[in-house]
Length: 295
Image 1: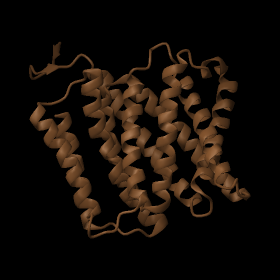
Image 2: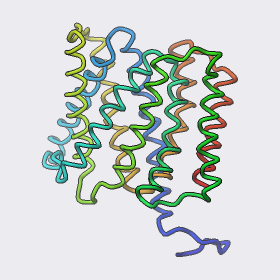
Image 3: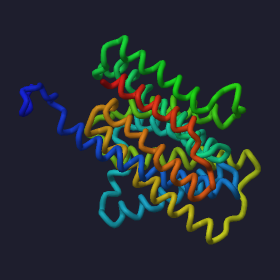
């Protein structure tokens, strides 16, 4: 292990973790753009149809990119078992969080999703033997994370609904998918991991939409929004895959907290959602919980 200028030890994977942190920050920023557009579309269409439209746009863009760059062969996974399991988990996660966006303010949905970094740290420690802080401190962070959610959502004061349950379920499923991503073999291409996700997600969303009454007619303006959302979705997933394959899962995951900035900003700009004191207080507690887990 090398040392820095002060003589303090520097982990061998520090350069990779720094690159991964930057990629993770960009990924979650791009995903926030997708979330705003999904919420706009969900005002006119059922959530499964919105998910199908956005995912189909992402898949079309990926196909065009692979064709232009001559990387079409990289779209097929070499290890389909892990790729399909991760894709199914992310399909469930996407449908859950898209439903949460449709019925909750972005900031509230993000707050529950912020349980993901804490869950990733604990799962990575249990399943991947990644570094976790002293046990008492780590579990204090876990407890604080749930306390932060309680402060933000004020159960018993503010009514809870299925949107809150969907966002919490999304956090758990997303955490499992991120831990699986660290298990992906180096010989598996980033494009294959993303293409598998998009194919499975589009199929699941279409099946759910068909079971719920079919697809509604879509106008040209809505198609444009879906195209932009698909572009952001594709970019976010490519960045996230590269981030989690570059550095430790427990290092990248906390950058999801940056979404509270975009959630409050976009919520106020596009949906006239107020930024309330209890929401900010809960977010700060959740960020502190993640720091304790990773310290």
